[in-house]
Length: 136
Image 1: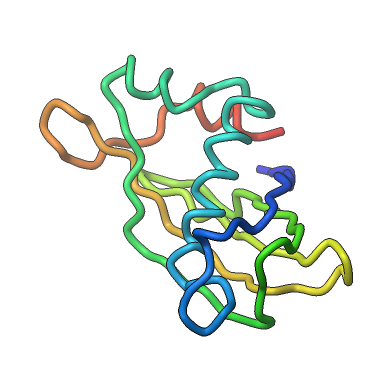
Image 2 (image 1 turned 135 degrees about the horizontal axis):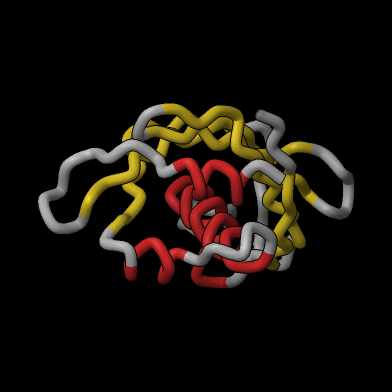
């Protein structure tokens, strides 16, 4: 199934900066997670709240990040994400964090999300209607 790429803009804040005067590595994950929440609501029209109401939640089970360029306070970035594949209980989501000023990649990689049933904490197959809504 084809999946679209979406973009969310972020401005690097003072509390994102580490003692080396650039963005702390943990913030890269935060940017991608925040972008996915925004994109779920805005583009897929199925927010995380809707998953929670159905007794479902997404857990990150794999994170792969390649750091390309430093980011500093005040930098404007675009967080681009795209579902790469979805099968069973898992969805692999690729991402690229781009410095808006130069258009160059600051980081790229992927997350593997596992859908779980919140009542028992076990993985659950991604429902067909969810795959369909995300196949835009």
